[in-house]
Amino acid sequence: SMSKLSGGVYQVLLQTKLLTTALLCWWLKGSGQTSLQWHVLLLMFVATSCFVIVDEGSSASGADSGRLPLGAMLCVLLKVGVSCYCAVLSEKYLKAFSDVSLPAKISGLSTTWAMMSFVLFCFEPEVKNNGFFANWDSMTWLVTASFVVKTVSTMYLLQALDSVQKNIGEALAVIVIYVAQVLLPSVDKAFDLSVFLLAVMVVGAVKTYLLAPGVPKEKIQTACPRPSNVKLVGLNHRPIMHEGP
Image 1 (cartoon, rainbow, N blue to C red):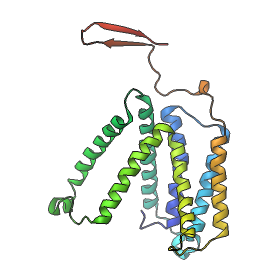
Image 2 (image 1 turned 120 degrees about the vertical axis):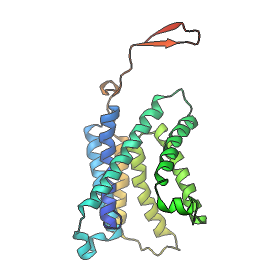
Image 3 (image 1 turned 90 degrees about the vertical axis):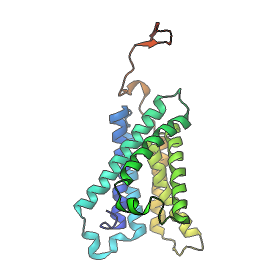
Image 4 (image 1 turned 30 degrees about the horizontal axis):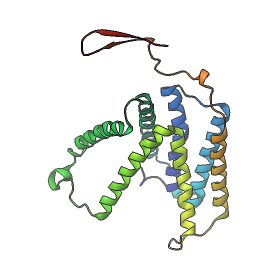
């Protein structure tokens, strides 16, 4: 999909994860958004999309900007949907099992991911012939280490915040990269006032979302209500009745 789509279109499709995550939080967790929060999320999506389009200059790329391959777009949207779905589920169960330590939760999730990755690369012909670590260099190890740090830090963020706020942070990261490229003398990137104003708009939308009052707790409907009576069985095989609230 990245080879078929221009950079601006690809980034715009990626920004749909803000709205997708909010919808999945409402569906899977029962935590909805207020009317103000929905409007701010929509504004943030439009502002971030305009920012990446103007920054990359894809709107002036000629005939390629008018070509929108449907298959590539569907692949990007599928990637966004699966990523947001996994993030919301991870957040839901990271917060549900509060009696389990966070390292134990990360270990359980990572074990499942590692097993699935092992099954997938077993079907790769080059891995069968040359081995898994063939052609690895220092940059490969550096990228692997960065992904490990990203995965662990994402789990900590989902434990402390929520999926929507995590995606908002990723949108702000695009602006931080732009500012670093402008300020660093080693990067040949000129300052653009229109891009800077769009960046200010995105930051303002993020601040507005964080200040906006959320849905009252009494109006939040949990997706999986806990039963009122829970029967616990101890090691001595004597049932213990626990009366819920």
